[in-house]
Image 1: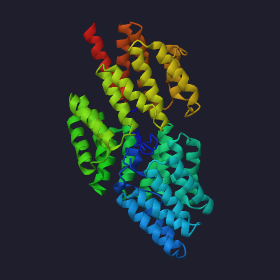
Image 2: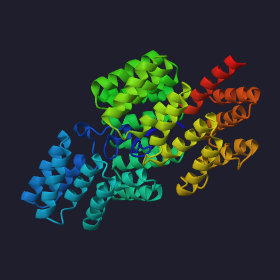
Image 3: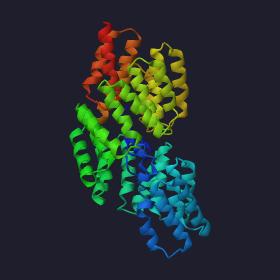
Image 4: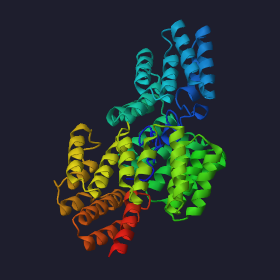
Length: 462
């Protein structure tokens, strides 16, 4: 799995979400949930907050209701989320047919992660004004977080139909496409968002995350530079650039960028998680753990932090600590984090000698999840770990006509094949297969770094 799930929100909001998801989710759709940025002072409510003035001006004066709407917008921008919800509620009480008030209150509820409440408000806004594109877009982001990518995609596409120059809707659709490994479609959507809104730094950050995932690290750095040129205080741009530099092996330069991100936005959990990864790779274990802890202090429900810290602990042979973190990560609303938390927990439990328990937990989880696509890769990984696919069948299933997808899947497939070989005591073949994982050069995947660590251990033991 990609080390940073920030596919933009959707980046936390899908995975949000990170990269986001990262973060996802990433500045972008509804709020910067993609980067885990829940500090409302830096909310980037793409739909209603940025665009509500245009809508309000197109309507007749609504008197006191409009006053409360504007107060709510100002409060939300200042981070006063609860007060904003109260003012939107006052606007609705004065004018029960005020679609914008419902939509903006949905944004505020999203900032509190009250996704159910937000959906109620977006649905009501759409019922009142079926042409309110922002409500469809923001509802789509929530649906994607909850694993309903089909409905989310439909909402983003309808928002684009209603407003063909709605950059946020293109970002949303691009994130869905990226999550489905449709990298060409995702890039086309991000390109279009930049054409529409070329002065907005966040648009370039979205594409920077995508290009990094596609292995175009120089392109990712170039996009991050464009974002920084437009907004030198865009923390997520330094985050994206730092991780692209990390992927190229320039860890010290990457550390500088991630530190700049934390300086610009001290309440940005995603930057601490990513900096922690780099510190860990540089051998600063205490510094890494301090950064992971800081991210959780800022957001105790930043599930990607639990995932990341769990994998760091696994590399330190702290299997019990890793398992505790992975169990917490498995509670994530983002299905991709939830999926891989269960897969990694299987690996850790197996290394603890608890194979029966590992198989039981993974087998119990699988029927409860929604396959992301008909060609669902997580299902194939799980089937192999549970002994339902042979190694040959599993490696064949990793093949894809899309070279980027093929490299991603083979990075993971060779790692899991090697893990099972090592568990069976076949260390020679395990080392060969861990090396095959490294040959994919997918440096941004957990499986790549885990293969490096496993090779060191096996080399030392043999």
